Amino acid sequence: MTSSEVDAEAVPAGALGVLRSSWLEADGFCPPNPEVYPHQWLWDSCFHAIAWSALGDGARGLRELRSCLGGQLDSGFVPHMRYLGPTVNRGPLSDRSSFTQPPVYAHAARVLARRGTEPGADLVGAVVSALEWLWRHRRTPEGLLYVVHPWETGTDDSPRWDDWVQLPDYDHAAYSAFDRDLVGATYFDRTGAAVWSRSLACAQASFNALGAHAALECAELTGDDRWRVRGEELAGVTDDLLWDDEEGLWVDLPLLGGGARCRVPTLDGALGALVTDDPAKVERVLGRLCNPEGFGSPYGLAYLPRGHASYEPGEYWRGAAWPQLNYLLACAAQRCGDDTTYTRIREMTYAGVLASGFAEYWNPEDGTGLGAVRQGWEAVAAAL
Image (cartoon, rainbow, N blue to C red; front, side, top):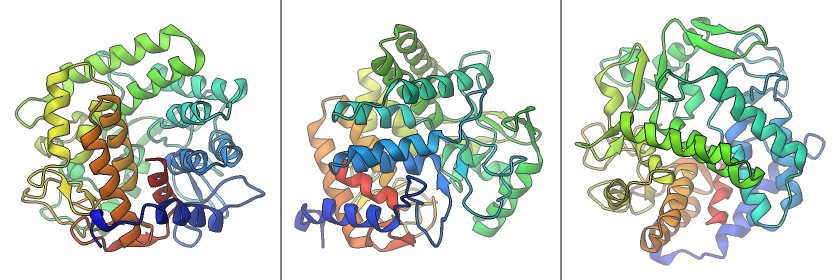
């Protein structure tokens, strides 16, 4: 099946089936995959909320978003996991992670509101508190946001982390060992939230793009112009300090450790198109997305350009297609008025979701499902 042969009606039907099959009524959320990923993940639940809303069940979308923000600490910090069952080693907290993830919750709340499900003052207040924590505790002197673990970006084994892992060749097991060791190298505040590290700190391009996007969405939710100013300021400093004119993408800035491979041209380096006000940057980035010599593949946007020396379409974060990135970049195209790119990303995403059987991620060349097959965030395709 190719993107031109996709049955579009099969996408919302399949998405609804995936979400309903994993919904935990007592907890008010869907684990990404009940067998492989039995806990709650922050940005997974944000994409689930967006999908529920698109599928006509804003009430469940609101419950899902409330549930993931229900793990928020009094300080405003939002953990990237809430554990169901035995404790997982993600820091000193016993029932949740001490690390965070991209602040997609502001966008999810805005989507719910636009589709007629009011998030309510308490949920909007939680979004504001979460963003305030990032602005207070995770900013460089120049104004960029930084992360202290690859988990916080959601792109766990991206080649942009290779210089920290220090491997001659990619090996997922070695990456997993590095991730575990990095927990021990992290500094946590008195509440248990990660704030710095002995080994890794990075002003990562996509985290900053999504942070700026969250601030702008927060301004729309609250009517508070301070968040618009913060979003525009962060988008501006991201353009100034993270844009790579030679590559035509935004790249990462190591603060502690790292090296030259932080500039590898990965797909998340295009997310600045969600917030930049520079039309030349937008044109260059969007022009690469669906180009077969760039990220454009028959079954979705590849994580690395197809001609790159490290491109491995069947490998975890080494070239595979990811539904949440497809969705966010479709939003960027829509924001920029590029209907052609938006439509093409939607077609490729539909094709990949259906061919892969709603898998966690998939091979962009042939649609083979990879990772956990039937994963909740695939349902976000229905929001396109």
